Length: 454
Image (cartoon, rainbow, N blue to C red; front, side):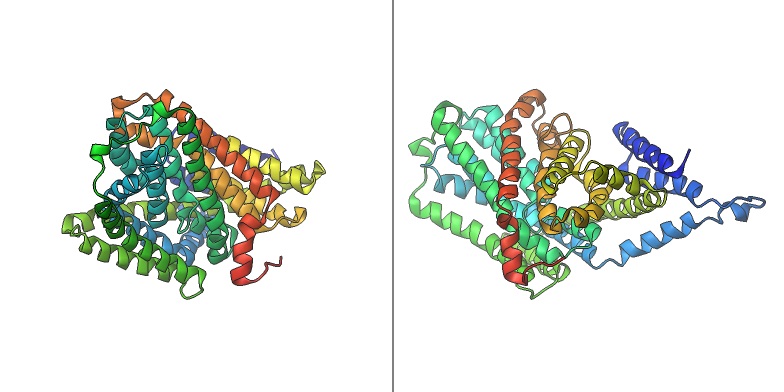
């Protein structure tokens, strides 16, 4: 076989192994080293030392070192730690209760409160699994007791929880910045309006659907509503401190006062302060947060080591050239290229998670952006919106599995799948809207940092 054929075989074999359930990070490393040994093989193995005389081992070592010294990735463990501390400080529970009382006169007030809580918590966490799991334990039982339709309630939680990979400080955007070698500051600025727009569309959908069918979300009983003074005091106590922390973190980044890593460190310290304020800072909570942070960070780092090794070998074998020539040979216009690229990413979201799509497949499209004259930050926001679908598209809709994992026999998985389909349609509509009006993503970064020039 020619080298490009080997590269395509490498890619197909990787997808097959992932679908079988092999760990992604170590599959990437194994595939990269295995096919890399073939790619860099120079012949002649006479001694044991000759077996290891292959450039693939040097490449693996260099990629590992590059990941460890990457300044952008330093923000990942710090943002993760901030999210885990906030999650365990009981702030979210207070916030959800206060918001549902404040929104009591709106149709579907508890669902709206859940979406707003997800949005706020997403900005403090950026971890989809954590948001969906916590809201499944907190909001779903409350909505069930209020006689909300279970499918409707599950769809709200699944959709709201996915906002964590889009709204800054998103871990996904940090990873994207490192992969595409883009400014994380501009990416964060570009994601603000698309994230808020998507959250707003979710809320509007909830209000409209409950207006048409009030039985799925009954209004709270008047006797269950506390005095207005208590409602707004609870809202002040729970909402303001967390919002101030988030605004300080994002404001320092977008204002150019701190790098993402520095802002993440400030956020981690702020999370500890909030936990102490709410009397939730214990040794056990701190130990759990550190353990979960180390576990998630290790996964991200090994994903990078494996993906960079895999991508380097794939490119060396000519895989990127084959795919680029295929796209160029189709004589696509810019809009056709964007639609085809996003369609491929959308279809990959059925069997794969966002991390696999982002780290393995998005780099295939990045070299073609100059060819088709596409702003890389605009493309990044289309991808970021599209990756929401990887959590909402059956059969691998991970948000549904996260929720099913905590609810167990309270609801069937098929019912959760049905409930998230309207939100999947909203994501696709948001992508179309942003394509028609790129300023939704590009206005804020251009205003803050000057117009981008390729």
